Length: 202
Image (cartoon, rainbow, N blue to C red; front, side):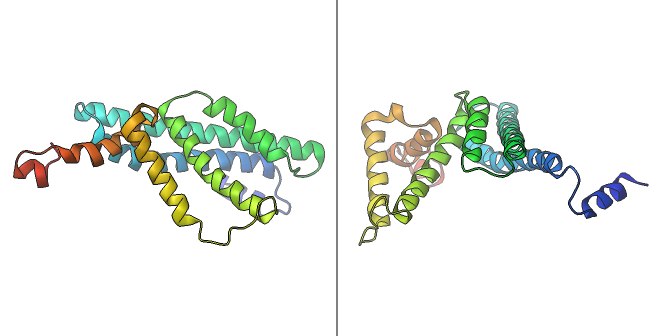
């Protein structure tokens, strides 16, 4: 009997034997794949737009960044799903605090190292949970739902804040964001011929 046939028979059973363990393995796989899918194109674009060095150096950086993102996300999913499975096994079901504790521990050990990739991931999540907690606060009645359209004012505040920081305290901004803003707002001031006015940045 082939391994594929044996695995198919295993999954056809109800309930699936060792499902929590298999789910952890699948989560590890998905974390690695998703991390690579997200990081590779981003690293490719940012490296060729803003990073100096030889072609070999650029591809080395792209592969290192992709590997780090993929490894970190896979490791986090492994820790999270393992701890969730253990807690559910011990307490007989999913508790309200289980996801937070599992992710808190995983976040500390995987994303606690302050490097550029981890910083990008954590700040990305921070922006998402800020909006999510605001929605939850309205739904649960902790704050009243505004009687006007919030988004235009929110967008205006974000853009006003980031450009003020860029103009007067740009050292506070993340490297990739600062590089993008230099390209948009500083480099557009530099030109002395038609070539670097339309076809080339510098």
